[in-house]
Image (cartoon, rainbow, N blue to C red; front, side, top):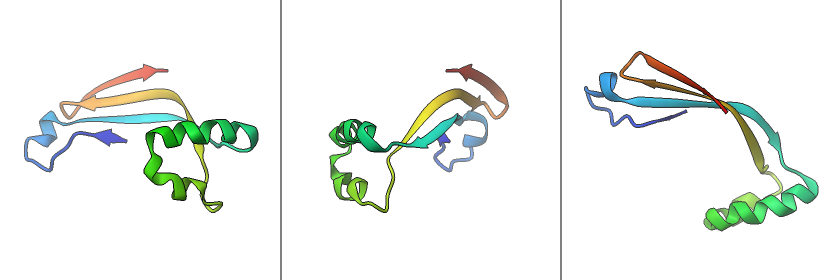
Length: 79
């Protein structure tokens, strides 16, 4: 879920929120060897965290976006 609220009174009527839905799976094996460097190109400061064996690299395949704005305007986008 992503939104643009700022904890203001106007947020109730003017904020927009987007729920992103899909399937998530851990990336392992040779695919991880390819994807981890790509992830770290963007998030290099997380190298220690991402490389820790206790953590997983997760790929989310997005299937749908649901956007709510103006408190009750709902739009659904299929990916």
